Image (tube, rainbow, N blue to C red):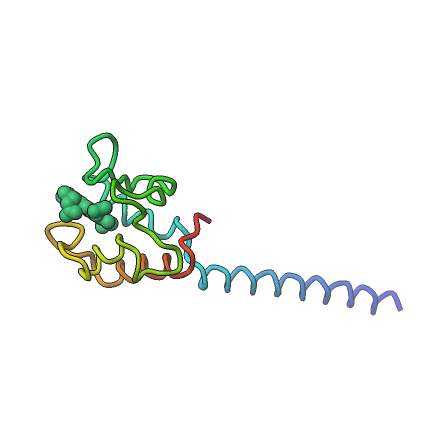
Length: 123
Ligand code: HEC
């Protein structure tokens, strides 16, 4: 009697742990967050898009500034990379390509595309 109760408590624990691990895994692979694209902006963009002298008034140093956009308006339309000026400029759909003088590697362009298309979430 005692033994089987202990066993069932154990198996409930195992189930809970397994389902938590599963949720963790899927949420990460389905929705990339700002944390996964920030290193790209930091390395390839903020040299020209930061502070008072930011080109086109577009600051790419924080999530809030990216979502605020440039002097001409929003550059990210959540869930619509095709309508997002930022993605059009890095993919070359709207020249000249960002960053000058050469495009990001395809894998980084895709990371930013996936982030926008999954809602451009901060976390
Ligand atoms: C060497 C400097 C430089 C770097 C690095 C750079 N940019 Fe730019 N960016 C500019 C300049 C200059 C403009 C304004 C002229 C133009 O639109 O081409 C601009 C304009 C833009 C615009 C258009 C804003 C608007 O409203 O017209 C976007 C979007 C943009 N950059 C995104 C990026 C992204 C994303 C990166 C990094 C992947 C990046 N830039 C890296 C210099 C740079």
